[in-house]
Amino acid sequence: MLFGIMDWQHYYAEAMLFPIKMKLILAPILLILLAAAVILGFKKGAESKAVLAIYSLCFVTVVLLGYFGGQLVYGVKGPAPPADVKAGAKIFANNCKGCHPNGSNIIKPNLPLRSAPQLAEFNSFKSFIRAPKMPDGAPGVMPAFTPAKISDQQAQDLYEYIQKVIEHPVRK
Image (cartoon, rainbow, N blue to C red; front, side):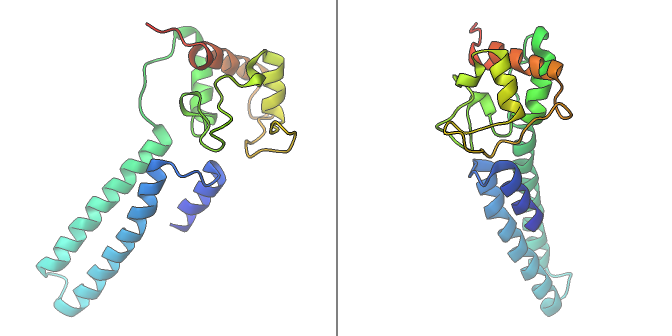
């Protein structure tokens, strides 16, 4: 639980997404159920039906924790991106999607990716991802994507993906 909370603080800046809310509710429930099973097991014996029922509830809770963890990591599957932006889609999925699903911004909802001024042209986008700043010039929570993390070509692929799929999607 401690490592999960630390990851949430680091990667999501404590944004209260639905899957995170569910994990924050389910984790203590699992802890309580396990404690109850251990205590009941000592009192009545490990073969009692009550202990088996509690362990069954623990199993269901673990499955739900895994499901909501999968929602955080993999999200909801959407339509496949156009073939010419697949490289950018992969970069977006690996580096951006957690905080910017569908072009929104879960950390700062008033600053969505969609219609951001940094998307006006590639050079301003590249400068921004290399050294992200808030509109007032203060450092933000977005990590800097140095050339060691995202090369200039990958930044170009990412920019094209954002432009074609998120900023100006083609509706069918």
